[in-house]
Image (cartoon, rainbow, N blue to C red; front, side):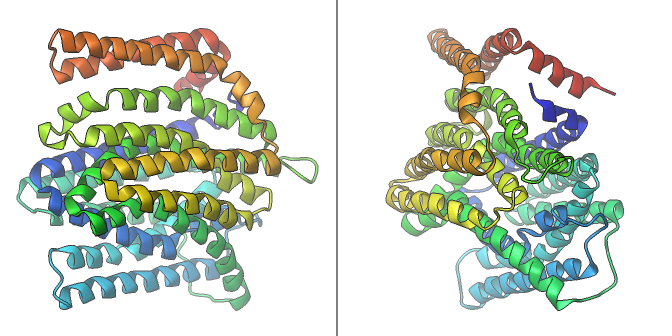
Length: 482
């Protein structure tokens, strides 16, 4: 039932790349959690979040602008140099802010980390522009290969530095290796490094487009990373570390779905619009198929993660991080409910409603920010609860936008997912039963976690295979096709 799965190996490659990226990121964070104090880990999380905010201001939107370029050829050189110039300004601002923190006598390595991370922003901007070219040319597999290489080398560099006693600087080194390898790989593949040329009208048009998407992504950043700043303000960096670690564990699963979903939806919907024979194209069934297929794969991942969070924390982190278990469980459900929002951007951009993105995201984010300010002072669980309630409140807005402007029928999607709902309920019952018996038999956390995954996966997989045979055949065919 997932026709867009014929965009096939591109989606499979993208999924594999995100798998490597999230596993490598998570492994590095787990080693760091056992090597660094929660305070140091929290300081790096704050520096990283600050640098990411600057990066969103400087980089966001350029990949999408290149992908959405309507002419057949590549965008003019002005687009490249305008994007790089904005990123250079952002990087310099971050370096200045970090060094000012040091010169003013700030405690801890926050300033040095912020300055170092900000130096990487222009590299990321050039990489983002190259990725836009590669997506336009349908070379998503190339992007995936570059991502796999950069993440693997960053993991080796980071763990090696941590084991050698590099401390929190090891995390900065890992990030630098990742950015340099991605830059070199993307330049080698796309080879978009045009001679300097500048046209004021073209630059202004690009900046207007990017500004709309930048506003959307900055607001989304506040929703995703605002908790770190609020927790640091009210409680301290140790609580930031607990929340950040929990968020990364959930993010390792979430980005396996969100990034491939974003790339697949852009590629598939762009092709669908290009092949439309009449004006007034809308995603309709193509969008419904993408949502349906994503839901079938995401439901067991996030529901299962919430159910086994206690055993997972025991296995990965030990007794010192038990406070992270309920945070992981709450964030997992929130991440599941927020997945449909990933489709809003490509759908609205491709139907010519870019102006609505900041409005929709601002409305949703205002709710999220209010909830965060109210609940985050109660600790990491409060911050996670704010994320969950924000996702619950945002979902109707997302459904309205997709229904009204993209003509996606959520009623039809819900009808198609009835069997999946029964399957995930059976999964939950099975996992709870296994956990209960594991406690009775005093099994180790490793054995309990393994049994839950095997039993839950078998229950869900068998029920889905029986209920959605056509989808499963198409999925397996796309993954196994040479």
